[in-house]
Length: 198
Image (cartoon, rainbow, N blue to C red; front, side):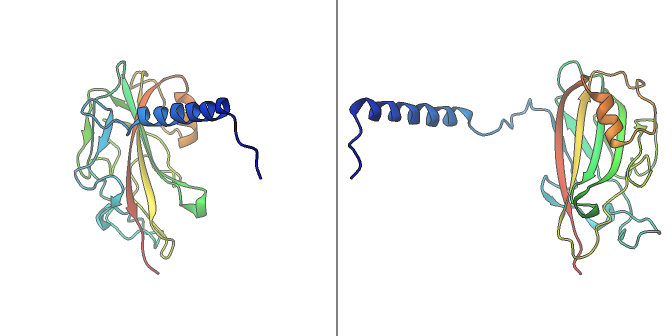
């Protein structure tokens, strides 16, 4: 037999539970209001499949079976003080979990609010090209090996307080992240899925 808890212990436990549940209730759902910094595409919704045309087309890689057309991207409601953006595209499941950096772009002026379909499949004056895992400075679409399941191609748009001309071209993903320390204002993300059966 366990001893009967005292009234004080019962009231204390009830109070802690009420505080915990009240705190959770106050947290609510993440804000999705009209004023939230967001990254979207007219070609796919967050967490849905990318069309084959958006996959890479490198002749040196048989896993690149698409046309390497970059998807349209747009963003809105940047944080106050934003002077430029950086845009990263990463496949976290690539290279057997080590990740593949598909696109590193930065120095995007705050006046730019998106890219049209196919616009970033080449270098252009709207952004400074970094260096992805394959050494390219422009968009490289998914090159998913068959039989490895769906990969989560993650686009991350970072608002910064840096002048668009502040950083040199050719920075890798990790180098860019290091240079952005202390200069970020907020971020928005978008995930497209792609995979191939065996």
